[in-house]
Length: 78
Image (cartoon, rainbow, N blue to C red; front, side, top):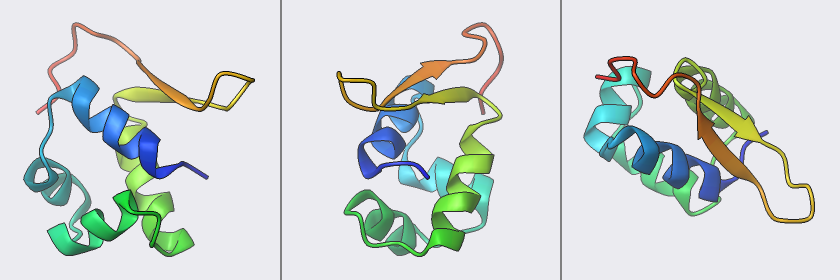
């Protein structure tokens, strides 16, 4: 599963707001705010993850904390 920090990192890497992520996932902005605070269902996190994985790779914690990397920095992301 993804961590709240990774959601924020992915949005920053993509230059997305919660409105952008809401459009991409179909989730309400309040649901996304809750996910970023660590209060989301597994289904919500899975939907956010699969949506963002079109553009980023989620890196597991490996002693330095979880992270995010762009898949292809030159792709159009909106």
